Image (cartoon, rainbow, N blue to C red; front, side, top):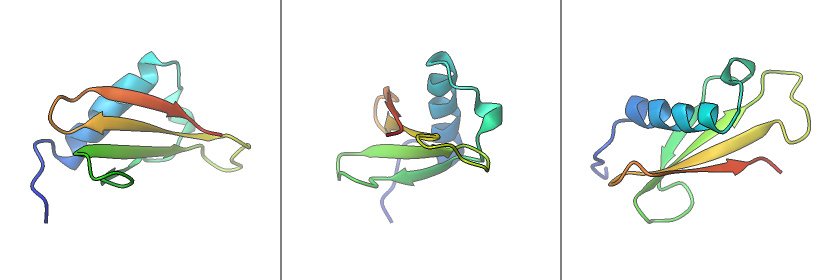
Length: 78
């Protein structure tokens, strides 16, 4: 398996901090799922957040976390 600088719990912590700063109320969301290089093979993690049921339309979002720099990007749900 690919060795990463950040561990899964660290990534979730970084992503959750970014999400909270972006105004998301994480207590309304289920436990997030973190995947390394989920979409692009670019050394980034994708952390998925889904609202607890009943999940409204657009009740999800994701946060990209760069494994090397810990830089984050919050992507709102469609």
